[in-house]
Image 1: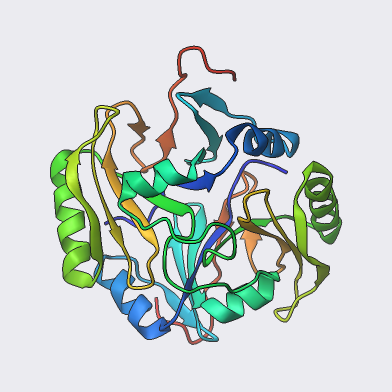
Image 2: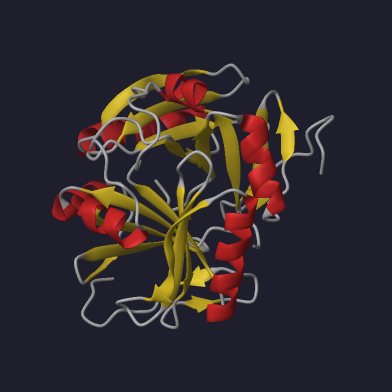
Length: 146
Length: 146
Protein backbone atom coordinates (compact mmCIF):
# COMPACT_ATOMS: atom_id res chain seq x y z
CA UNK A 1 0.00 0.00 0.00
CA UNK A 2 1.72 3.16 -1.19
CA UNK A 3 1.59 6.00 1.33
CA UNK A 4 -0.93 8.25 -0.34
CA UNK A 5 -4.52 9.35 0.14
CA UNK A 6 -6.81 9.65 -2.87
CA UNK A 7 -10.03 10.97 -1.36
CA UNK A 8 -11.07 12.44 1.95
CA UNK A 9 -14.84 12.06 2.21
CA UNK A 10 -16.71 14.08 4.79
CA UNK A 11 -20.08 12.69 5.80
CA UNK A 12 -22.61 15.52 5.89
CA UNK A 13 -26.20 15.87 7.00
CA UNK A 14 -27.15 18.64 4.56
CA UNK A 15 -25.27 18.52 1.27
CA UNK A 16 -26.41 21.95 0.07
CA UNK A 17 -25.30 23.55 3.32
CA UNK A 18 -21.91 21.82 3.24
CA UNK A 19 -21.40 22.72 -0.41
CA UNK A 20 -22.22 26.37 0.32
CA UNK A 21 -19.87 26.43 3.30
CA UNK A 22 -16.89 25.08 1.37
CA UNK A 23 -17.62 27.16 -1.71
CA UNK A 24 -17.66 30.29 0.44
CA UNK A 25 -14.15 29.39 1.57
CA UNK A 26 -13.00 28.94 -2.02
CA UNK A 27 -13.37 25.16 -2.33
CA UNK A 28 -15.52 24.95 -5.45
CA UNK A 29 -16.62 21.49 -6.49
CA UNK A 30 -18.58 19.59 -9.06
CA UNK A 31 -21.86 18.09 -7.90
CA UNK A 32 -22.82 14.76 -9.41
CA UNK A 33 -25.39 12.30 -8.07
CA UNK A 34 -25.81 14.13 -4.75
CA UNK A 35 -22.06 14.12 -4.19
CA UNK A 36 -19.68 17.08 -4.34
CA UNK A 37 -16.10 16.52 -5.52
CA UNK A 38 -13.47 19.22 -4.99
CA UNK A 39 -10.02 18.78 -6.49
CA UNK A 40 -7.48 19.54 -3.77
CA UNK A 41 -4.04 19.14 -5.27
CA UNK A 42 -3.40 15.45 -5.91
CA UNK A 43 -6.48 14.26 -4.05
CA UNK A 44 -10.12 15.16 -3.78
CA UNK A 45 -12.29 16.32 -0.92
CA UNK A 46 -15.71 14.73 -1.23
CA UNK A 47 -18.96 15.76 0.46
CA UNK A 48 -21.53 12.98 0.73
CA UNK A 49 -24.49 12.03 2.84
CA UNK A 50 -23.24 10.72 6.15
CA UNK A 51 -25.58 7.73 6.32
CA UNK A 52 -24.79 6.66 2.77
CA UNK A 53 -21.10 7.01 3.48
CA UNK A 54 -21.37 4.81 6.54
CA UNK A 55 -23.45 2.22 4.73
CA UNK A 56 -21.12 2.25 1.74
CA UNK A 57 -18.10 1.48 3.87
CA UNK A 58 -19.82 -0.91 6.27
CA UNK A 59 -19.21 1.41 9.20
CA UNK A 60 -21.62 1.68 12.09
CA UNK A 61 -23.22 5.10 11.92
CA UNK A 62 -23.07 5.71 15.65
CA UNK A 63 -23.89 9.00 17.27
CA UNK A 64 -23.92 11.96 14.92
CA UNK A 65 -22.01 15.04 15.88
CA UNK A 66 -19.16 15.16 18.33
CA UNK A 67 -15.54 14.51 17.57
CA UNK A 68 -14.83 11.78 15.05
CA UNK A 69 -11.19 11.42 15.97
CA UNK A 70 -9.76 12.96 12.80
CA UNK A 71 -8.50 16.49 12.29
CA UNK A 72 -7.68 17.93 8.88
CA UNK A 73 -4.99 20.57 8.88
CA UNK A 74 -4.49 23.36 6.41
CA UNK A 75 -1.07 24.94 6.76
CA UNK A 76 -0.37 28.47 5.60
CA UNK A 77 2.61 30.75 5.26
CA UNK A 78 1.89 33.41 7.88
CA UNK A 79 0.07 34.10 11.12
CA UNK A 80 -2.06 36.68 9.30
CA UNK A 81 -3.37 33.96 7.00
CA UNK A 82 -4.40 31.89 9.99
CA UNK A 83 -6.42 34.80 11.34
CA UNK A 84 -7.97 35.51 7.96
CA UNK A 85 -9.05 31.94 7.26
CA UNK A 86 -10.48 31.32 10.72
CA UNK A 87 -12.45 34.58 10.40
CA UNK A 88 -13.67 33.59 6.93
CA UNK A 89 -14.75 30.19 8.21
CA UNK A 90 -16.68 31.82 11.07
CA UNK A 91 -18.38 34.08 8.54
CA UNK A 92 -19.26 31.01 6.48
CA UNK A 93 -20.95 29.34 9.44
CA UNK A 94 -18.17 27.41 11.16
CA UNK A 95 -17.85 27.15 14.93
CA UNK A 96 -14.46 28.37 16.08
CA UNK A 97 -13.31 25.67 18.52
CA UNK A 98 -9.89 27.21 19.17
CA UNK A 99 -9.22 30.90 18.51
CA UNK A 100 -5.88 31.48 16.80
CA UNK A 101 -3.01 31.50 19.29
CA UNK A 102 0.61 30.52 19.66
CA UNK A 103 1.05 26.74 19.83
CA UNK A 104 3.23 24.50 21.98
CA UNK A 105 5.44 23.73 18.95
CA UNK A 106 6.26 27.36 18.30
CA UNK A 107 3.69 27.92 15.61
CA UNK A 108 0.40 29.76 15.46
CA UNK A 109 -2.89 28.00 14.87
CA UNK A 110 -6.63 28.10 15.26
CA UNK A 111 -9.31 25.50 14.72
CA UNK A 112 -12.92 25.39 13.66
CA UNK A 113 -15.65 22.82 13.18
CA UNK A 114 -17.53 22.88 9.88
CA UNK A 115 -21.36 22.75 9.95
CA UNK A 116 -21.18 18.95 10.34
CA UNK A 117 -18.62 19.05 13.14
CA UNK A 118 -15.57 18.14 11.05
CA UNK A 119 -12.58 19.84 12.60
CA UNK A 120 -10.01 21.85 10.65
CA UNK A 121 -6.85 23.24 12.11
CA UNK A 122 -5.42 26.27 10.30
CA UNK A 123 -1.75 26.50 11.16
CA UNK A 124 1.40 28.41 10.52
CA UNK A 125 4.23 26.08 11.49
CA UNK A 126 7.68 27.53 10.76
CA UNK A 127 9.13 24.00 11.10
CA UNK A 128 7.12 22.59 8.21
CA UNK A 129 8.07 23.82 4.76
CA UNK A 130 5.35 24.58 2.26
CA UNK A 131 6.49 24.26 -1.34
CA UNK A 132 5.37 26.78 -3.95
CA UNK A 133 2.50 24.47 -4.93
CA UNK A 134 1.39 24.18 -1.31
CA UNK A 135 2.84 20.71 -0.74
CA UNK A 136 3.90 20.09 2.83
CA UNK A 137 7.35 18.59 3.20
CA UNK A 138 8.15 17.02 6.54
CA UNK A 139 11.52 17.92 8.05
CA UNK A 140 13.97 15.23 9.11
CA UNK A 141 13.15 15.20 12.78
CA UNK A 142 16.21 14.70 14.92
CA UNK A 143 16.30 11.19 16.34
CA UNK A 144 13.34 9.98 14.34
CA UNK A 145 13.49 6.84 12.27
CA UNK A 146 13.26 7.18 8.53
CA UNK B 1 -8.33 29.26 1.68
CA UNK B 2 -6.62 27.31 -1.09
CA UNK B 3 -8.16 23.90 -1.71
CA UNK B 4 -5.48 21.71 -0.21
CA UNK B 5 -4.97 19.53 2.84
CA UNK B 6 -1.64 19.58 4.66
CA UNK B 7 -2.11 16.98 7.37
CA UNK B 8 -4.61 14.28 8.14
CA UNK B 9 -4.28 13.44 11.82
CA UNK B 10 -5.79 10.24 13.14
CA UNK B 11 -6.53 10.20 16.84
CA UNK B 12 -5.35 6.89 18.29
CA UNK B 13 -5.66 5.19 21.64
CA UNK B 14 -2.39 3.22 21.42
CA UNK B 15 0.33 4.94 19.43
CA UNK B 16 2.66 1.92 19.27
CA UNK B 17 -0.15 -0.26 17.97
CA UNK B 18 -1.18 2.29 15.35
CA UNK B 19 2.43 2.83 14.28
CA UNK B 20 2.94 -0.93 13.90
CA UNK B 21 -0.27 -1.30 11.92
CA UNK B 22 0.60 1.41 9.40
CA UNK B 23 4.24 0.33 9.14
CA UNK B 24 3.13 -3.19 8.33
CA UNK B 25 1.16 -1.74 5.41
CA UNK B 26 4.20 0.17 4.20
CA UNK B 27 3.49 3.55 5.76
CA UNK B 28 6.75 4.17 7.60
CA UNK B 29 6.94 7.31 9.69
CA UNK B 30 9.14 9.30 11.96
CA UNK B 31 8.22 9.34 15.63
CA UNK B 32 8.85 12.55 17.52
CA UNK B 33 7.35 13.58 20.85
CA UNK B 34 4.83 10.73 20.90
CA UNK B 35 3.63 11.62 17.43
CA UNK B 36 4.20 9.70 14.20
CA UNK B 37 4.50 11.61 10.93
CA UNK B 38 4.30 9.76 7.61
CA UNK B 39 4.97 11.65 4.39
CA UNK B 40 2.17 10.78 1.96
CA UNK B 41 2.84 12.63 -1.26
CA UNK B 42 2.29 16.33 -0.69
CA UNK B 43 0.76 15.92 2.73
CA UNK B 44 1.40 13.98 5.89
CA UNK B 45 -0.57 11.37 7.77
CA UNK B 46 -0.13 11.92 11.49
CA UNK B 47 -0.84 9.51 14.34
CA UNK B 48 -1.41 11.18 17.70
CA UNK B 49 -3.14 10.50 20.96
CA UNK B 50 -6.86 10.94 20.48
CA UNK B 51 -7.46 12.92 23.67
CA UNK B 52 -4.56 15.26 23.01
CA UNK B 53 -5.79 15.77 19.47
CA UNK B 54 -9.25 16.67 20.68
CA UNK B 55 -7.94 19.00 23.35
CA UNK B 56 -5.51 20.62 20.92
CA UNK B 57 -8.29 21.49 18.51
CA UNK B 58 -10.92 22.36 21.09
CA UNK B 59 -13.12 19.48 20.00
CA UNK B 60 -15.34 17.58 22.39
CA UNK B 61 -13.89 14.10 22.76
CA UNK B 62 -17.23 12.35 22.71
CA UNK B 63 -17.66 8.62 22.53
CA UNK B 64 -14.58 6.75 21.41
CA UNK B 65 -14.94 4.21 18.67
CA UNK B 66 -17.75 4.13 16.16
CA UNK B 67 -17.90 5.99 12.92
CA UNK B 68 -16.45 9.48 12.94
CA UNK B 69 -18.08 10.54 9.71
CA UNK B 70 -14.91 10.60 7.61
CA UNK B 71 -13.64 7.96 5.21
CA UNK B 72 -10.17 8.03 3.70
CA UNK B 73 -9.89 6.41 0.29
CA UNK B 74 -6.86 4.86 -1.30
CA UNK B 75 -7.36 4.32 -5.01
CA UNK B 76 -5.38 1.72 -6.92
CA UNK B 77 -4.94 0.64 -10.51
CA UNK B 78 -6.51 -2.82 -10.50
CA UNK B 79 -9.02 -5.03 -8.76
CA UNK B 80 -6.20 -7.38 -7.75
CA UNK B 81 -4.57 -4.56 -5.79
CA UNK B 82 -7.81 -3.96 -3.92
CA UNK B 83 -7.87 -7.61 -2.86
CA UNK B 84 -4.20 -7.58 -1.90
CA UNK B 85 -4.37 -4.44 0.23
CA UNK B 86 -7.55 -5.44 2.05
CA UNK B 87 -5.97 -8.83 2.82
CA UNK B 88 -2.76 -7.17 4.01
CA UNK B 89 -4.75 -4.84 6.25
CA UNK B 90 -6.63 -7.78 7.75
CA UNK B 91 -3.30 -9.49 8.41
CA UNK B 92 -2.07 -6.29 10.10
CA UNK B 93 -5.04 -6.24 12.47
CA UNK B 94 -7.71 -4.28 10.62
CA UNK B 95 -11.38 -5.19 10.70
CA UNK B 96 -12.73 -5.69 7.19
CA UNK B 97 -15.99 -3.73 7.19
CA UNK B 98 -16.77 -4.35 3.52
CA UNK B 99 -15.24 -7.25 1.63
CA UNK B 100 -14.07 -6.25 -1.86
CA UNK B 101 -16.92 -6.26 -4.35
CA UNK B 102 -18.20 -4.46 -7.42
CA UNK B 103 -19.52 -1.00 -6.56
CA UNK B 104 -22.58 0.93 -7.70
CA UNK B 105 -20.37 3.25 -9.77
CA UNK B 106 -18.85 0.45 -11.79
CA UNK B 107 -15.69 0.09 -9.78
CA UNK B 108 -14.43 -2.45 -7.30
CA UNK B 109 -13.78 -1.64 -3.67
CA UNK B 110 -13.44 -2.92 -0.15
CA UNK B 111 -13.19 -1.18 3.20
CA UNK B 112 -11.58 -1.77 6.55
CA UNK B 113 -11.38 -0.07 9.92
CA UNK B 114 -7.92 0.41 11.41
CA UNK B 115 -7.33 -0.58 15.06
CA UNK B 116 -8.82 2.76 16.16
CA UNK B 117 -11.89 2.48 13.97
CA UNK B 118 -10.74 4.87 11.22
CA UNK B 119 -12.24 3.67 7.97
CA UNK B 120 -10.28 3.25 4.74
CA UNK B 121 -11.83 2.42 1.41
CA UNK B 122 -9.52 0.70 -1.08
CA UNK B 123 -10.93 1.26 -4.53
CA UNK B 124 -10.34 0.66 -8.18
CA UNK B 125 -12.45 3.25 -9.99
CA UNK B 126 -11.97 3.19 -13.77
CA UNK B 127 -13.56 6.66 -13.96
CA UNK B 128 -10.87 8.30 -11.82
CA UNK B 129 -7.44 8.61 -13.41
CA UNK B 130 -4.38 7.96 -11.29
CA UNK B 131 -1.28 9.77 -12.54
CA UNK B 132 2.10 8.04 -12.51
CA UNK B 133 2.86 9.61 -9.14
CA UNK B 134 -0.42 8.35 -7.71
CA UNK B 135 -2.23 11.70 -7.87
CA UNK B 136 -5.95 11.40 -8.38
CA UNK B 137 -7.34 13.62 -11.11
CA UNK B 138 -11.09 14.15 -11.08
CA UNK B 139 -12.85 13.83 -14.43
CA UNK B 140 -15.08 16.59 -15.76
CA UNK B 141 -18.40 15.14 -14.71
CA UNK B 142 -21.13 15.75 -17.26
CA UNK B 143 -23.55 18.36 -16.04
CA UNK B 144 -21.48 19.32 -13.04
CA UNK B 145 -20.52 22.88 -12.31
CA UNK B 146 -16.86 23.79 -12.49
